[in-house]
Image (cartoon, rainbow, N blue to C red; front, side, top):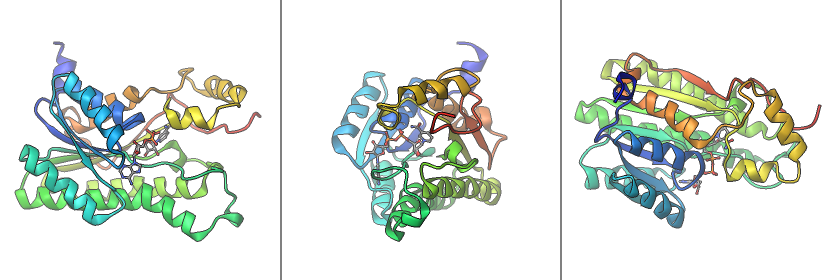
Length: 267
Ligand SMILES: NC(=O)c1ccc[n+]([C@@H]2O[C@H](COP(=O)([O-])OP(=O)(O)OC[C@H]3O[C@@H](n4cnc5c(N)ncnc54)[C@H](O)[C@@H]3O)[C@@H](O)[C@H]2O)c1
């Protein structure tokens, strides 16, 4: 094993990955398991959770499904309890759940209902508040160190016409990360964030179905010339969750193949 591989080592760490049933969350779970972690698949969809559990156990690590709705505080607290009952400890939280809700995805602000705005904020920002709150409280009580990786989006940093609520919620995630990183550094609790660009998942397949020319134009504006894969996010998450980033907290890393703006229509 090279020195670099040893640095990104999650051997016997216990990681909660929210929304790990598919897409980016599943990719993160696979990379973490490959680095030696055991995974709590905190997922609202039990069938999807089972598939990820099977993948992780196939890699030789332990995994449990915990049916969780990360927008509900009692469910988040039950997720933490199930983790401690199964593994006796928690080392890492990955706040991955999020997304644009409903169809059409592009709702102009003048037509956006307040309950839609509230739902998007709840799924993308309140969920991360609840999970951070529960896990940080636990680590402080136990006097143990912890690492959190929040998932935001490039949409937090630039205009994103697809959903004004989504971009606003993800911008909140970046500030939540910076503030919690600053406040809890003294307790050895590190909080960092990844802002992905486009990642090849069922969501982006759906978004660009029938608009292949826009998808191809996207590839042309990405300096590394391709969409990301879930494991591209997983590898950076593993770095931020591991001791290799032990002197990093409160930071957001853009993982987008170098892309710094969105193209949702042909120029
Ligand atoms: N896919 C991309 O291109 C992209 C780009 C930028 C950021 N992101 C972010 O990455 C994260 C993952 O995105 P994805 O594309 O893999 O999403 P996805 O929709 O494919 O997967 C999300 C998972 O979360 C689960 N989930 C949904 N609501 C839940 C809830 N309330 N409680 C628990 N689980 C719930 C779903 O069942 C699903 O398995 C999101 O935060 C998203 O905003 C994705």
